[in-house]
Image (cartoon, rainbow, N blue to C red; front, side, top):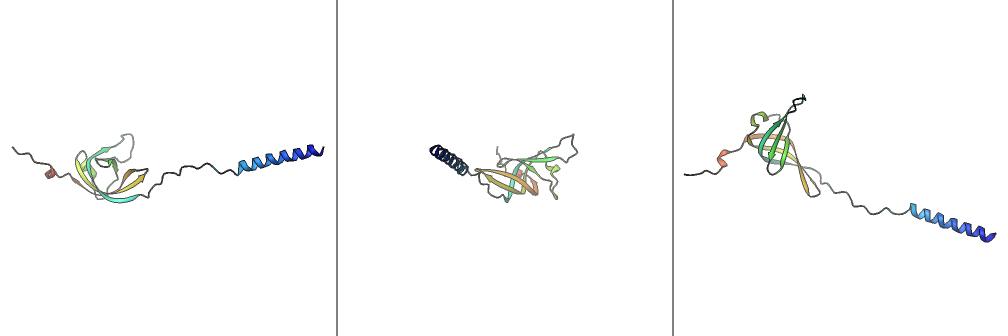
Amino acid sequence: MKKLIALLVAVGMFVALGSFAATTKKPATQTPPAKESPPKVKDLELKGKITKSQDPSNDKPPTYLIDAKEYGSLVLPDGKNVKLDEFVDKDVVVKAKVEVKEKSGSKSYKVKEVESVKAADDKAAPKTTK
Protein backbone atom coordinates (compact mmCIF):
# COMPACT_ATOMS: atom_id res chain seq x y z
CA MET A 1 0.00 0.00 0.00
CA LYS A 2 2.86 2.38 0.85
CA LYS A 3 4.44 1.59 -2.52
CA LEU A 4 1.16 2.41 -4.32
CA ILE A 5 0.83 5.78 -2.59
CA ALA A 6 4.50 6.59 -3.26
CA LEU A 7 4.00 5.67 -6.92
CA LEU A 8 0.92 7.94 -7.22
CA VAL A 9 2.78 10.83 -5.57
CA ALA A 10 5.74 10.38 -7.94
CA VAL A 11 3.48 10.29 -11.03
CA GLY A 12 1.65 13.39 -9.78
CA MET A 13 4.97 15.24 -9.36
CA PHE A 14 6.04 14.36 -12.91
CA VAL A 15 2.73 15.57 -14.32
CA ALA A 16 2.91 18.79 -12.29
CA LEU A 17 6.52 19.39 -13.37
CA GLY A 18 5.59 18.80 -17.03
CA SER A 19 2.67 21.22 -16.96
CA PHE A 20 4.79 23.85 -15.17
CA ALA A 21 7.51 23.53 -17.82
CA ALA A 22 4.93 23.87 -20.61
CA THR A 23 3.56 27.15 -19.20
CA THR A 24 6.98 28.74 -18.63
CA LYS A 25 8.29 27.86 -22.09
CA LYS A 26 9.80 30.79 -23.96
CA PRO A 27 7.88 31.86 -27.06
CA ALA A 28 9.46 31.08 -30.41
CA THR A 29 11.58 33.86 -31.80
CA GLN A 30 9.58 36.10 -34.09
CA THR A 31 10.94 38.33 -36.79
CA PRO A 32 10.65 41.92 -35.65
CA PRO A 33 8.29 44.10 -37.68
CA ALA A 34 9.87 46.14 -40.45
CA LYS A 35 11.28 49.32 -39.03
CA GLU A 36 9.66 52.40 -40.42
CA SER A 37 11.72 55.54 -40.49
CA PRO A 38 9.90 58.69 -39.41
CA PRO A 39 8.52 60.67 -42.36
CA LYS A 40 10.69 63.47 -43.72
CA VAL A 41 9.24 66.59 -45.31
CA LYS A 42 11.25 67.78 -48.31
CA ASP A 43 10.88 70.63 -50.77
CA LEU A 44 10.60 68.96 -54.18
CA GLU A 45 9.93 69.97 -57.76
CA LEU A 46 7.33 67.74 -59.36
CA LYS A 47 7.25 67.76 -63.16
CA GLY A 48 4.25 66.27 -64.93
CA LYS A 49 0.67 66.76 -66.05
CA ILE A 50 -2.15 67.80 -63.71
CA THR A 51 -5.49 66.02 -64.02
CA LYS A 52 -8.77 66.75 -62.30
CA SER A 53 -11.23 64.12 -61.11
CA GLN A 54 -14.62 64.75 -59.56
CA ASP A 55 -17.41 62.35 -58.75
CA PRO A 56 -20.66 63.93 -60.00
CA SER A 57 -22.71 62.14 -57.35
CA ASN A 58 -20.75 63.77 -54.49
CA ASP A 59 -20.78 67.38 -53.39
CA LYS A 60 -17.11 67.13 -52.48
CA PRO A 61 -14.56 69.42 -54.15
CA PRO A 62 -12.57 67.99 -57.06
CA THR A 63 -9.34 66.07 -56.58
CA TYR A 64 -6.24 67.17 -58.46
CA LEU A 65 -3.52 64.66 -59.35
CA ILE A 66 -0.09 65.14 -60.82
CA ASP A 67 1.50 62.33 -62.77
CA ALA A 68 5.11 63.00 -61.82
CA LYS A 69 7.42 60.69 -63.73
CA GLU A 70 9.91 60.32 -60.87
CA TYR A 71 7.43 59.93 -58.00
CA GLY A 72 4.31 58.41 -59.57
CA SER A 73 0.79 59.79 -59.36
CA LEU A 74 0.32 62.10 -56.36
CA VAL A 75 -2.73 63.88 -54.97
CA LEU A 76 -2.33 67.66 -54.78
CA PRO A 77 -4.01 69.34 -51.80
CA ASP A 78 -5.90 72.58 -52.34
CA GLY A 79 -3.38 75.39 -52.57
CA LYS A 80 -4.31 78.53 -50.70
CA ASN A 81 -2.49 80.84 -53.11
CA VAL A 82 -2.53 78.52 -56.13
CA LYS A 83 -5.44 77.94 -58.52
CA LEU A 84 -4.97 74.46 -59.92
CA ASP A 85 -7.90 74.76 -62.37
CA GLU A 86 -5.76 76.92 -64.66
CA PHE A 87 -3.21 74.13 -65.11
CA VAL A 88 -5.45 71.09 -65.74
CA ASP A 89 -4.22 68.90 -68.65
CA LYS A 90 -1.03 70.94 -68.99
CA ASP A 91 2.59 70.05 -68.35
CA VAL A 92 3.67 71.90 -65.22
CA VAL A 93 6.37 72.22 -62.60
CA VAL A 94 4.99 72.16 -59.07
CA LYS A 95 7.06 73.23 -56.09
CA ALA A 96 5.69 71.49 -53.03
CA LYS A 97 6.45 70.19 -49.56
CA VAL A 98 6.36 66.41 -49.84
CA GLU A 99 6.34 63.87 -47.01
CA VAL A 100 8.66 60.94 -47.79
CA LYS A 101 8.20 57.65 -45.90
CA GLU A 102 10.55 54.69 -46.21
CA LYS A 103 9.32 51.20 -45.41
CA SER A 104 11.02 47.93 -46.30
CA GLY A 105 13.27 49.61 -48.84
CA SER A 106 10.47 51.33 -50.76
CA LYS A 107 9.52 54.98 -50.58
CA SER A 108 6.07 56.54 -50.56
CA TYR A 109 5.35 60.19 -51.24
CA LYS A 110 2.51 62.45 -50.06
CA VAL A 111 2.17 66.11 -51.02
CA LYS A 112 1.55 68.18 -47.89
CA GLU A 113 1.49 71.70 -49.34
CA VAL A 114 1.66 73.22 -52.83
CA GLU A 115 3.88 76.30 -52.84
CA SER A 116 3.77 77.24 -56.53
CA VAL A 117 2.72 75.97 -59.94
CA LYS A 118 4.04 77.14 -63.28
CA ALA A 119 3.73 75.89 -66.83
CA ALA A 120 6.61 73.73 -68.04
CA ASP A 121 9.25 75.75 -69.85
CA ASP A 122 8.94 75.23 -73.60
CA LYS A 123 12.35 76.85 -74.12
CA ALA A 124 14.04 73.87 -72.51
CA ALA A 125 12.94 71.62 -75.38
CA PRO A 126 15.62 71.03 -78.02
CA LYS A 127 15.23 73.12 -81.13
CA THR A 128 15.28 71.57 -84.55
CA THR A 129 17.07 73.31 -87.42
CA LYS A 130 16.34 72.97 -91.11
